[in-house]
Amino acid sequence: MNSATLQPPVAVNPSTRVHTLELRDVHTYYGHIHALKGVSLHVEEGEIVTLIGSNGAGKSTTLKTISGLLSPRGGEVVLRGSRISGMPAHKVAELKVAQSPEGRRVFPRMSVLENLEMGAFVNKRVDPADLDRVFQLFPRLKERRSQKAGTMSGGEQQMLAIGRALMAHPTLLLLDEPSMGLAPILVEQIFAIIQDINKQGTTVLLVEQNALMALAIAQRGYVMQTGSILLTDDARALLQNEMVRKAYLGES
Image (cartoon, rainbow, N blue to C red; front, side):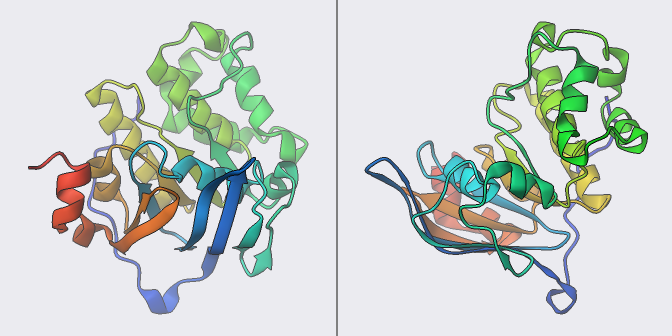
């Protein structure tokens, strides 16, 4: 396991930012259910940005809309200045956007190595440098490279899900609930590794119910409620916001 410890997020100078991702008034539906109601947000190159909110707020739907798993009926998803709204998921992946899904979704009958190789499908080949990077971040995966993914613990499967996404060599990494179901010590380790990934040059959009941990490593955050953006601010300001503290940090 990587031995990194959580560090305060590095401030990003707005004047040096390169626009990476923008959602402009996005509306997404599940059948007749209006799941995203005019969501607008942006992520700049080199940032960790987090979406926090309760179950059903629209956080995972936002990631699926970005990655092409869902197609919005209104608004635009723009990646580095180019509109990608409605683009098939495999085409979005070719633009160096990778998602680690909620619930891990590893291939249980395949080995750790085979799962990682699946993550490199958009590159048409497995780059040994990408595999080495994943094994450096997650030494446990190297130790268990031949083990079937379905026999691993929840924490190990989460490492594998993130590692598989990294095999696509993404410039934008979408993480959906990486701490879900993990013991507190593993949660801290996973978040430290997310910081490591970011420091190595990958921009991160993080969906997370553990608002305290997410805001501790992010530069900025968005609070979602019933499919809309309720509040946005610097992460440190959100940590001090009375409404956020009461609603999402468990303070009375």
